[in-house]
Image 1 (tube, rainbow, N blue to C red):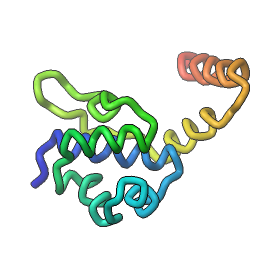
Image 2 (image 1 turned 135 degrees about the vertical axis):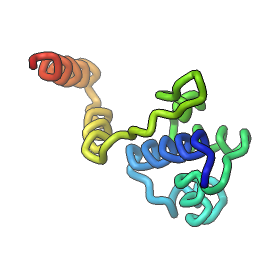
Image 3 (image 1 turned 90 degrees about the vertical axis):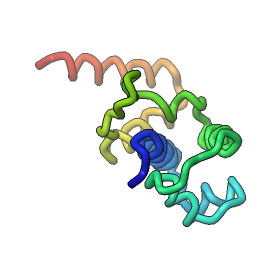
Length: 116
């Protein structure tokens, strides 16, 4: 069984990779590793060393802290992860070049989500 923290970090790798629209093979090529190794990282089966985590953050254009977001400080891991549609929506929003329009879309989403 993978350690819960390794599983959480692996899920975050998968989320960031999917948000960037990269296959496991493409990410592996960027890192100089096999897609099987990327699979093992994403499943939490293999732990990610600090230098590899740094390389992953750079390849996925996220801060290293991204991989640890949503973790409980008492050591418990939030087992929830983003659904595919959320990742897809974030990717589409991020693709909007005009920052003003991007902010308007985000404000619309906030308004809709708070109007229950």
